[in-house]
Image (cartoon, rainbow, N blue to C red; front, side, top):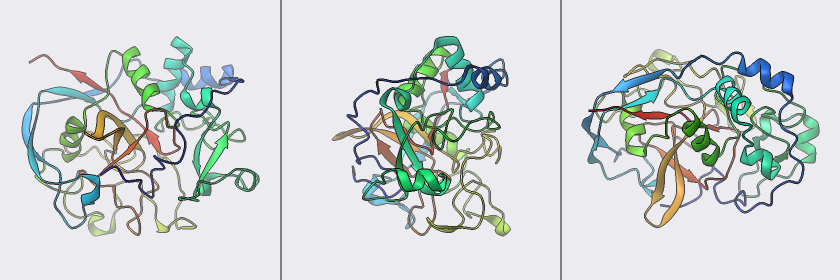
Length: 307
């Protein structure tokens, strides 16, 4: 436990960066346009309390991640966002509060190489251990691939380049919180017993993709477009939740292990590929420091339900 994974650059120097002196913020016209597309209220699915078998000892599991052993876990009744928080919803939050994200404040964020313009790919430094990640100045939730990009047209996509601190700020504003890791896994399983995917045992039943992951040869040979899809692109599955695996990693409120206080992320992302990272399963987990922002990481919120 506590090792760095290929997909999640949790130990590559994102923590401890100095704040940028220049924090221009989103273009007001773009911000207003995105915020205008946010729904009036969060769509939360109520889940009953239950005891379930958490974790996995399956050969697909990564034992070094602490996926096992399989153990009984209990959750009280709670509500969980039907989807991850979208760009539009986050824009509404920024409009109401003036929130400045860690990526904006610190001046850069990590972007997958395949999403960058040729100019930015040539001009930005890569992460040594994972060279498909570029540290891009000006990459933010409203400029997801750097200053020559825009979130326009992606209002219904998951918001990305948000740290756990940003996610907690949004949740507090919305009268919600981040889910615990146990709540997240219970919800992702959708009532199924020890299945690796929210819909069952087979990743692509009858050849049909049911989540947004990397197709082709990672990282330079994709056979379909790479990047986020709408937050409700796949599903709903199980309890009525969409995209619990694939698309974007999701922040939870827990620490990775007693000796590793980095924040747990769940669900995998559009960068997951079975050739190197099969963390698109219901029991899979990774970790990152709470101020880290990434182009494949977002969140969904939870709410307490009175028993």
